[in-house]
Image (cartoon, rainbow, N blue to C red):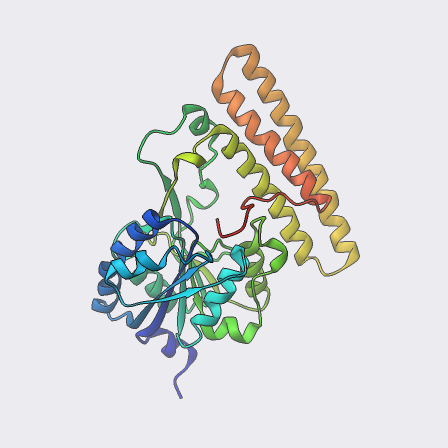
Length: 326
């Protein structure tokens, strides 16, 4: 009987899962990149069968025409329960016949054709159950300099991480999962995070706590195409607050004792207050010196602060209100 590592090194069956909600242009752009991505993975003998599964969260089935127009062999399903959690759990169910599940969001594209092959290579080389890769935000026009100065869309926390480095949590917008491990673990996406974000951090943290080998693949980058409506200062600030809020709530969900939750709350309040105070000082300095960089970083720090404080009080901030996925 083959060992776990020998199984990992074989060409595997893959399900590329794409959640979508009323983004026909974005979805069409992503689907157009996939033939070359799939061909590359097959050419390198990393993948045998590759299924593309589109999970539409729109009752009106607005993605159906886009899928049909793509000319690709795609499994199209509609998830009528609103929210990213229901869609991602439906993806896990739809991919039940595959060895590997790969998530990519509808407003993203692989940075280059070897994206899937690189994820699969990292899985094989490091005998991993979970592989995460970088996401780089791009726009077709320059961002507001204030937003850039504040670093609102920077993802610098893993910028220096090399391929094979261990991680303990990850986002699902560029993620490979060993389907058997996920099924055996019994971990699902938590409905409490359906509208707030953080469902992916909690999901992958729970996989890690159940023994998943989780690694980083620095070369498997996807591009996040930021739409016009998400380029505003208000969106940038509220996104920061929402992410901080979700981060504390994830820690609360992971704490398995009353004492542990009390510690998380205390840390959340303390860290939030510190961020808010530091941001207030920066903002004041920015006003005095008329420095947009200080104003922007101050606003970002204050947003982190109030998000953390709200999360410590178990108050939610809806990042994806109105239903559907982000």
